[in-house]
Amino acid sequence: MEKLCGFVAPSGVKAYFFTGDRYIRYDIERDSIDDGYPLRIGDQWPGLFDRDIDAALPWSDGTVFFFRGEQCLSYDLENGAVRDGPRPIADVWPGLFPSGVDAAVLWGSGNAYFFRGGLYQRFDGATGQIDPEQRPIAEDWPGIFPGGIETALWWPSGNPYFFAGDQYARHDPDSGALVEEYPRSISDWPGLPIGPLAAPTPTGPVETPAGRAVSVREVFPGFSADFEGRLPYLYQDIKGLVTIGVGNLVDAPEEAAALPFVHKDSRTPATHDEIVAEWHMIKNAPDLARKGHLAAKKIHNLELPDAAIDDLVRRRFDVNEARLAAFFPGWAQWPADARLGAHSIAWAGAFFPNRWPTFTAAANAGDWLAAAAESHLREDGNPGVAPRNRANQRLFANAAAVVARGLDPTLIYYPATL
Image (tube, rainbow, N blue to C red; front, side, top):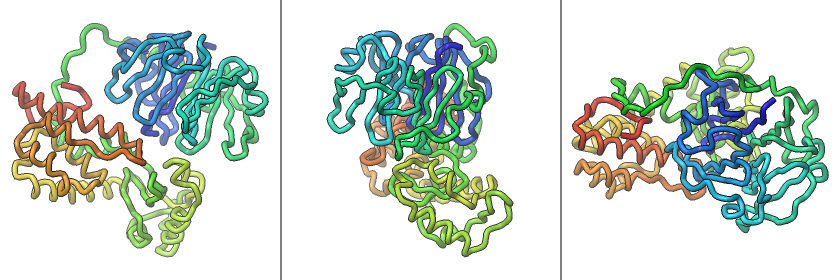
């Protein structure tokens, strides 16, 4: 088998696996490979090493560090472009294995771990430095492929996974031990090992998309799910607030009780008392926010059907639409990308638009580049909002391009960059 390399995107929605010159995209919630993969790395990741990637390390700001041999580069995942490099590993990560790494993982604690052969090194998140000591994997990671690790992932559920050859293992970060019944075959993961290319990929220059004749209301649920995920059960967000669906807050038991929950196994309707009990169980679960938005999957009992999630998202969208249309005098004439960007900010809260005077002035003047610069949601304590911020900036920059180039303002051009 060719070497496997993988990482989980900072949004926690998708994972990516690389082998040779190919890669797949993996949907975390559906637990399956996305349609149309594998694709060729060189056709889809401009500037990235086009084959034989050794390791990938995602960072909370949306950067992913890729390693091949003695080289390292940083990649802007949201904008699909190299930020820096390639450069020698010794220049980017002083003190790290200078001749290359086999695997890397950002731990839930904020530390990072790098593996080479039977050894590993730690990056201390508190000091921002590499611990120069190279320690044996076998001593500190009992049972986790002591002869060498090919790739390591911190799954959004709080479970670290390690891969080597045709096997993978799950590690318990609390006990520091291998979970019972592991290692297992990587065939448990749909799409692994990575097979041949799905279809020939186009070559030559990429044409500017013509845009999509689709309403903002129709496209918004999928757009926001890329940043929030789409979960049918109650969970704690990063602030410990009870949430469901596509980032829909239900941080009061009676709000949850008003929703049509069903039992996850029997699909029979849940009672008012059962829903309230479920809400309190999730709200009071220790460390649930720290472990990530998928951690509640292991303990939940009730779920919202897909139709109920769709209805929840549409109802909140419609409330925001009415509020935005009343607040901005020229709302109906805004380019569709700008309206999608405004809905994105409103969805994430932050007292928008009432307490955003500088953005409001730019938007009312039709200065979409200035609006892009003022579209930033605070990331303090919530680094996961960084991908949404980058998407918002792209949306308003697209709106500026639509006006400057005389393009159809009713079409949505995102995720393309005009």
